[in-house]
Length: 340
Image 1 (cartoon, helix red, strand yellow):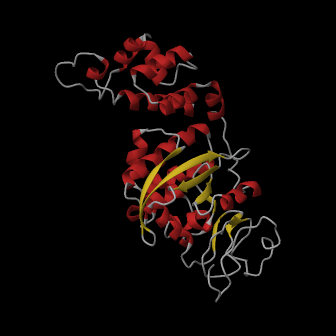
Image 2 (cartoon, rainbow, N blue to C red):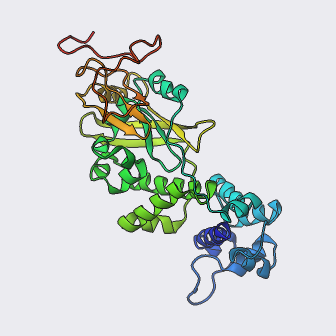
């Protein structure tokens, strides 16, 4: 029944934002008890019976046709992401999956082929996130991009949690309100794509209990698939910079995404981005089975640090696995050596 409840909640949230004037209806005299459009107004405009639409919002009408969904989406002026979300909520698969209890948590292991991509894109910050935005792997520029993230225990590192609960986030993101809305809209979409996922459920419950801002945004029921965008940073070490990002779905994973931030070479933003790879840094684990392994030179420019399947709590600094690999990451100079 969960997806049916979600469907009704989603439809109610969308029609509450559409005024009669926007769809060519005269405004009613007096005070409207319903924010936005009434059920019957949506039904008439979509060409379905009032009873049918009422049952749809109540979760009693199963699997509406594509034509009905298209008509409702047109009336409610849904975006492309919202139309996909509506279709997903209405699908038979969503109803079947929502009726099951999904006990399995998402895998936190990142394939070696994906880890190598973190080196390929250097000096751009790149990281791998789980379906619930856990930070599973990151190259050094990406870990540096989020000041204070590495102070958290590896299993606690999560970009959604960081945005709402870390003290540094509101100083880091110049457009924090936009970032926060995007984070919540993405989680709303992920909850439907992965019904019953315990990692998503736990994260939403935690943020709802600890962040009033998250709770307010969650109740808005905005949805958005985060595939690309732009973020404005005020970084304490690199200074102000505006970076674009691209998100790529990782094949054969439990909803993992590879995120790459970038700026055009020759710009001030690019120069600031380069500073993320040059700070003195300490060993830090990205999380789970994938850890950021420090260069075998210690301090100095960390040009190619990437996450490796290793537990840095036990790492002594004498590992040789990467050094013997023909395509291993580029490294900074040894202690006392000058950077070339």
